[in-house]
Image 1 (spheres, rainbow, N blue to C red):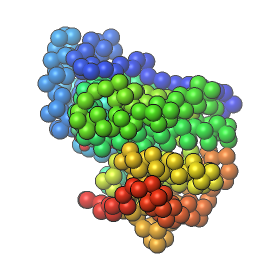
Image 2: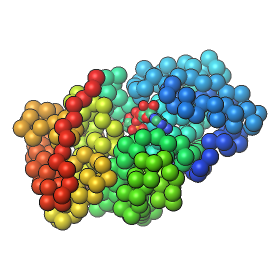
Image 3: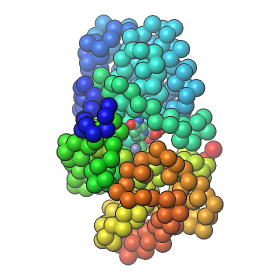
Length: 381
Ligand SMILES: NC(=O)c1ccc[n+]([C@@H]2O[C@H](COP(=O)([O-])OP(=O)(O)OC[C@H]3O[C@@H](n4cnc5c(N)ncnc54)[C@H](O)[C@@H]3O)[C@@H](O)[C@H]2O)c1
Ligand SMILES: [Zn+2]
């Protein structure tokens, strides 16, 4: 598409609510008749029974394939093979962002429809028409773009509320970045992930995601710690999944996600959730922007309260480890990275300086707000 055009893309249908899983079969039926279900063992143990029952009631014969855990090119190719052997006409991801990205890429290569049933609200992966592919050891490799979004995204709020609160918290980190990045993309009039210039619509949805989270995230996280579905929980699930999904894709990514991708280049950050690393990217982006001190302060305070990392210490890095920070910054600024959608040029040394600076400033903000000092993170391999 010519980049002078503006565009919005979205999934065909989004369904959310308590017990939605019981209607998965009904919603899948118009899309395909022989679904292949892809879920890891843990997720399948949690929801497999309900999924099978729902599909049976809708008269669909389904097959389960175990997801290997990493959205790598090899895992995608393996699922393509399984699709071909099974003759399935729709592939359904059940789980987190990794399973979802693998299924989208595999469904595309196999030439069949795909649908997502997220069992956590940990990322905005479910609604988009792209996959993030990693090496088998977990370093960012590439974005793969597809001509279609999922035909269906179905979220059971009770299943999400039953999952560890840390996963919902990660989703809040991913979704708050969406507005910061869409705002930067709108200012620079850069191309979005949807392959055109940003629309008023895409940018507004990104901002709405931020507003909903600012208002509801703390309350929702507390409710989910007790596995309760409240109106605040429903709003946060929608913000993390749908609003942030449409907002990042049609509003655009910028520095925060480029810094996230850079962080995956150092082993010290492996094992952290996507949204946790993205939050470090958001703080870094605000510093790069020279945002008002009060804005950076509010963001650090709020996201620390939500339970997200705001210091290098919490993502396994140190301000004096310039070598690792340079590896991160070099990867974050490679040609083609979304950091070049910022309204000003950003170099690798700029990113190193911003990263170093957040350690002391975030520690000060937390201290002044009476929040706990950062706990060091050690990657578990
Ligand atoms: N394509 C996109 O548009 C996009 C957007 C954002 C993020 N992503 C990608 O998403 C990935 C991260 O996804 P993630 O943070 O969801 O992690 P993940 O998918 O790697 O892991 C989720 C974990 O949660 C577990 N789990 C799932 N449901 C559960 C439940 N109900 N109860 C208990 N445990 C449950 C799974 O077994 C798994 O171990 C990254 O690869 C990132 O690049 C993609
Ligand atoms: Zn993200």
